[in-house]
Length: 59
Picture 1: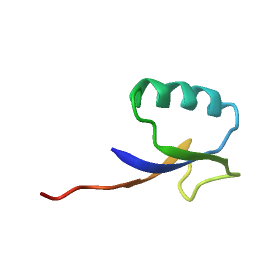
Picture 2: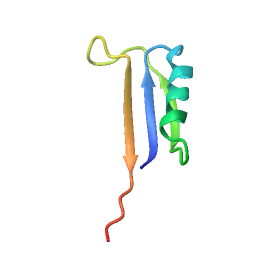
Picture 3: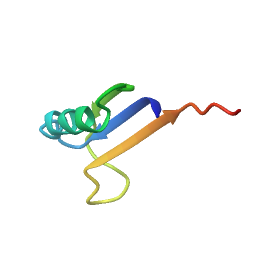
Picture 4: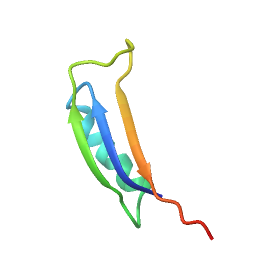
């Protein structure tokens, strides 16, 4: 389970839909997150980039 995620979108209109999807996927334990609008990505055609940090527990 991700503990934190940073989401970069190139259009702020994508923010509401992303928030809806995140709530559907992480119903019980939502990670901390930030949603940042950027002017562009390094590769053409990219609409969203997600950076996640997860914690694992070794037995």
